[in-house]
Amino acid sequence: MVLNFLGSGSGFADNHTSAYFTTNDKELVIIDCPVSAFQKLKRMKLGDYEQIYVFVTHTHGDHVGGLGLFAQYVFFVLKKKLTIVAPSSDVFEDILTIMKIEGNDSEWYNLEHVLNLAEKPWLKGCIPTVHSPQLERKCFGYKFFANGETIIYTGDTATLKHFLERMEDVKELYVDTSVYYGMIHLKLEDALPKFLELNQSGVEVFLMHLDDANAAEKMVANYPKINVVR
Image (cartoon, rainbow, N blue to C red; front, side, top):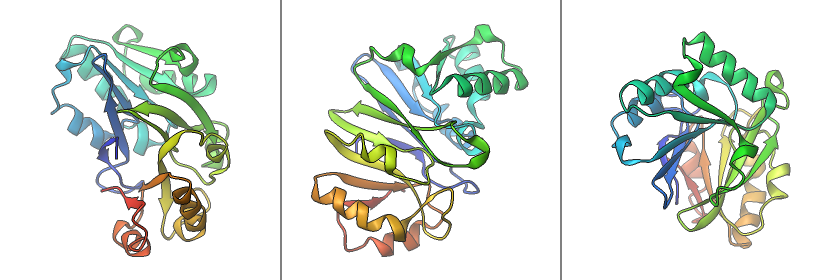
């Protein structure tokens, strides 16, 4: 597993789903920033990094609830500016609103559209997906080159469709999965056959955002290339 996780739980868990990796240029790339992630990030040696990014998948509270506070921490404690990356123009505007509501001055952080980072060698693409109908056309995953491997991180999703179209060279798939609740999340029982197909093509699957990690582990116990993120 090339990503480091700050949490892997679903919406009402104690530790919400968020992950990170580092680059050769002393950059820290974080995917989503719930409050639980902020509490862990501030205990890391963040001063060691030249640049800190937060890539937003969507604006549900369990994914961006700590974003405003983290931006303030980076600015006032680390004396740097956090770069927040929006996957679309609509999400860009929503993040701007969130930051204003939380009292962040626009001079305290940088907000960038994902297309403005296209030259980064570790960013391989932004992938639209379907999740909550209230956030229609505002939910995304990402394709990264992290620690020597090409990976896809789905964010919250109810479908694999757009991700399966971008699987070339991918070695690891980090995927939102639910044991009991489908509709706006992939249900593990339904998605399992496709995960096994991906395994056969050389892709290792990591299940995140689970509503019941223990039950998921039992369901995939016989499949060594399908893993539950803890």
